[in-house]
Length: 203
Length: 208
Image 1 (cartoon, each protein chain N blue to C red):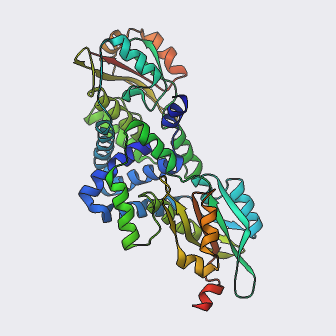
Image 2: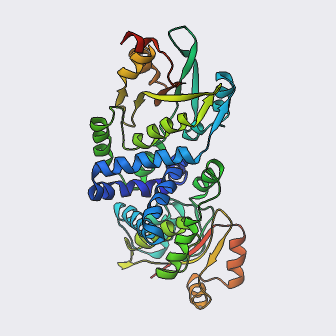
Image 3: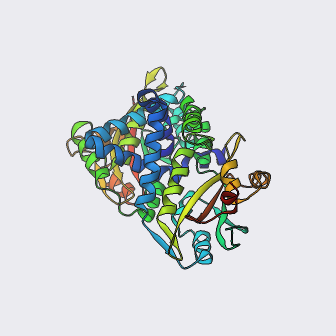
């Protein structure tokens, strides 16, 4: 199980860099909105291709999340700050991003432009194109999970990209999200000092 | 995660743009990746092979590549004009592993894209991703000079995840290497290719 977990979290620099360029190619032709559609579509299609899940209790679901057995935590290492607050220790796109910046140069501006488009038209939570994939995947994956017969809901709280840029939910949303997460604003800032992403799952 | 999500899109892309469309997309991605990596120049084959071993050339992005220096390619005058190189693990393997553990199976389009490529472009693909990285190598070769001479890259042989192999007999004949020898290399490597001086007068070509 341990080696399978590593295989899932490890990434593939060549394919990842190729994927970034594929997305840039789409943006050249269709702009940020076209790129955003592709990002949303590939993340949704990935979640839909994975098996659905059901759990008897929230505790059972939390155990599955921590072990990385649930589809929603399959590609990242998560730590549960509270039963509803998940902390991703390292961005699953980190290595691909590092390989891109090492081999190609600085991350193309379009990856940030598309995030601005996403933030203003879909949901404000993305730093770059990678966040769009990740957050859309989590949202679509959560819809495939039921706990005690009820669907699970996902909300993004804060993310720091491999490049060091940070995006936190809007001020007016934050108190509600933090209450659901069961953490204070100070705790959020403390957690985000050395982790990549903070998000919540609830019903 | 990005690679797995990209694969999940292949089926959708192939249904919308056709497998030919996916091949065109992938070829463009391979070409664009190579072009974005910039140009390289080496004094001679030894310095290129050292750069490769140390992961400094564009070819190194694919992973653990070995220069098989016992397999020099010579021209009609007996001068060394290139070498055979072998990639230990297919660049697509880690992605296939992740797909197996997360999704279960590869989309049908993976096979369909590879078959279309084999029929319409060149019979050297064992999976859809061969389209990207074979094109990538061809383009990278164009961006590198050794002793001021531009290079060419020939795909020779590869082994897929499930063990199926492709041997490029025409290219092997051109450089005068026995296909059975290259087949034996596939026991320990996933992909074998030649890098050689562009326009070199090869024995196999002269014989043709």
